[in-house]
Image 1 (tube, rainbow, N blue to C red):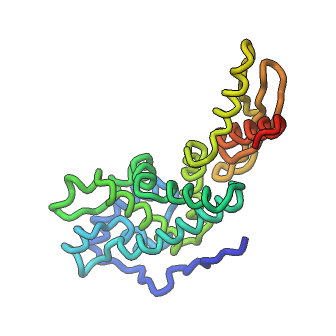
Image 2 (cartoon, rainbow, N blue to C red):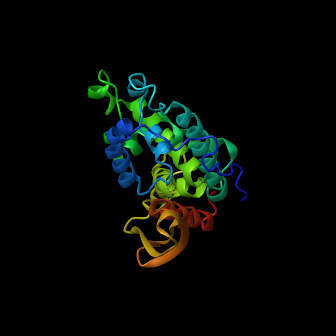
Image 3 (cartoon, one colour):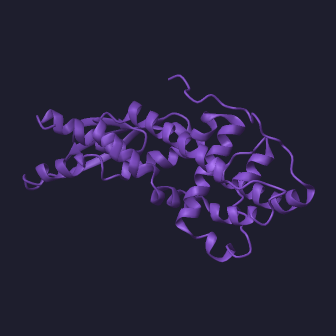
Length: 249
C-alpha cells in the first residue's frame, strides 16, 4: 500500500537546544530511546516529545511542549491502525470502526504507556511531577507525541515497529471481534466426552510482523487451521474455519 503520509524528515525543525536544557533532558531522551528501542537522529524531536506543557511553561525559551507532536501522532496512529485492520481483519465497516476506536482510545494508549514505562521519560513542571507520571490522559497524550516524533524523524515504518506489536496483541484480546472459540466450544460441549484443543504449529516473519498458524482439534483429530498475527487471532481464525466446515458463519 502506498504511504499516504510521506516522512517529513524534520522539515521546518531546528535541531537546536540550549546547553542547559539539553543537559537536563539528555537523561530523559536516553531513557525514552531505551524503552521504545529507537534512537533519534534529531534529538530536538525527542526532547519535545518528552516535554509536558507544565515544563514548557517554565522553560519557554528553551523548548516546545509535546502538544503539537501529539496532534500529529494521533493521525499517524489512526492511519497505521486503519491500514492494519483493513488488510488483516476481514470484517464489515461497523466492526472495524468499533475495533479501531478500542485500539486508539485513551485506555489503550495508557496501557501501552504503562507497559513501556513512558511516565518515567517525561519532563514535568514543579507542580505536576507528583501526579503527572500516573495521570491517564497525560500518558496517553505522551504516546501520541512519541509516535509523532518518530514519524518526523524516520517515517511511518519505524513507527509501525514500535506500536504494531501492541496493537496486534490488543486485537487478539478484543471482545469486539466475534468470539469464534466460545461458539465452537459451546457446540463441542453438546457431545459428552469430546475435548477441544488448539495448537500453534508454525510461526514466521520478523518480530514486529509475526504470522502464526494454529490447528484446532477435537480429541486427536485436526478439524481446521487458521492464521493470524498473534497466537490468539490465529486460534480465533482456526475456530472460525471449523465453524464454517460445520455450516456456521
